[in-house]
Amino acid sequence: MGDNASMTLTKCSIADSSNTALQTFSVSLRTLNDFTVIILPVVSGKMTIRCGAKVNIPGILKMEGVSVISNEDTATIAGTTPSIITSYKDDSGGDTNDDGEATKRAAGDWVGIACNSGSCGTIDAGRIKHAGQQSVVGGVWKSAAIITLGDAAPLFKDGEIRYSAGDGILILDQSSPSLGNLRFSDIAGADINR
Image (cartoon, rainbow, N blue to C red; front, side):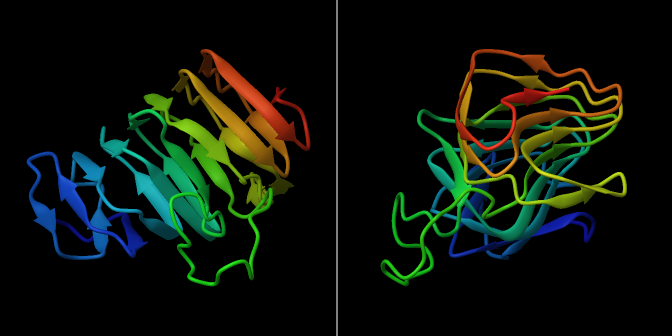
């Protein structure tokens, strides 16, 4: 694997599309086309998906702090029912940060998903929860669980966005996402903001 566009996963084990276990916790999605997350993972930092990579989430993916999933090409983010992308502080599926009840999940615990200019693909991830932490987008602070930029044209299939500290989906520039059967609840801003 190359050294480009790496992400860091902790407390996890992953396998590629041939079910070959990867022993490293730093994985390049530039050269790894498909992989499946097979144990409760935590992403710290920016998880960049490039070159048509397909990410399968067969359960829960937890995002820590200023974590963001950045789609920069034709990524497919999919999951088995129910798949959840949520906060590191969310004890769904287990107490990941091993602190009992000391921390509570909240809207804005992690940034969200950014579909950058030129990106397309499909996001069919089930539930996206506790996102919407403010981040700088185009030189201005923005807050949403999902942000589409430039000429991005992703497809959002069936899913739910809950507990966003900002908008559910923020559509910027000339981006033109296709919106499927989406449900929104406990969104601080607009469900869909154009």
